[in-house]
Image 1: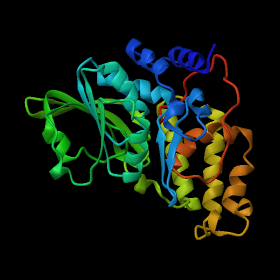
Image 2: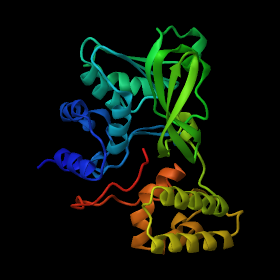
Image 3: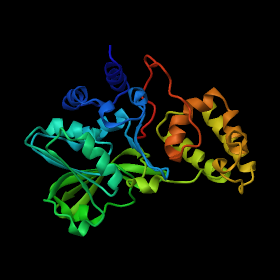
Image 4: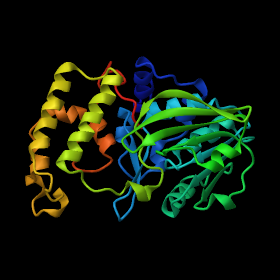
Length: 320
């Protein structure tokens, strides 16, 4: 059984809906073709980095459960024109191109020239996919929009998108602040917009330039962990023991001086009080780290993914 076989089996067992056409496309498209970074985490249902900038910006290919969820809710059919706002390494675009077939078309829009260059190279074998760098949408010529997928955090749908939706058309987008969003399906009916809430998510920023952030202070770290606790409580994926330990960690973080320099600015980052505090929490914290790290959107530390699948494990988060 291949890693992809195991991944799809585990996702289905955990209740993720994977349409047949999405599954077929995933067998045709290799995620390794869209990143030069380690892709092993993808088969553990983790996001995979596809691009890092010298300034510290990071963009990822979403975790498989999120990809399946997005494509399921897009209601894809052959011959459609799909607009993707915010590139995801080209992997999602390739999947969609296979599903909507040669009669369809995919337009990928992204504000970053680095991202567009990366995905254009990766999608050279997909003639129905058009990649465009866009910073001024007033100059963008698009037909009426039927399906739009927004793959990065935004606080509101931009005017070009809401005005461009055709009757019955819809967008799927993570709407909210950088720490917490709701995945919304926003459909136009009789010139009005109607929202369907698809659940809590945490996407990184749409523009890779906005992903360059500083290490949180102890107070910011405490606040973010509290948000993680609430997110996990809402999703019913946190045990009482873990919740209690996280609250204890929050209390300890609030006791640290809030004017500590960032770990990367110190001579021995591993001796930084913030990192030492997290490191001493041990295996239980490492187990929760992928969820917490997705919230932080920063590389404070690197905790390795498990080397093997946990047979029978269930889907445990709703984070891209």
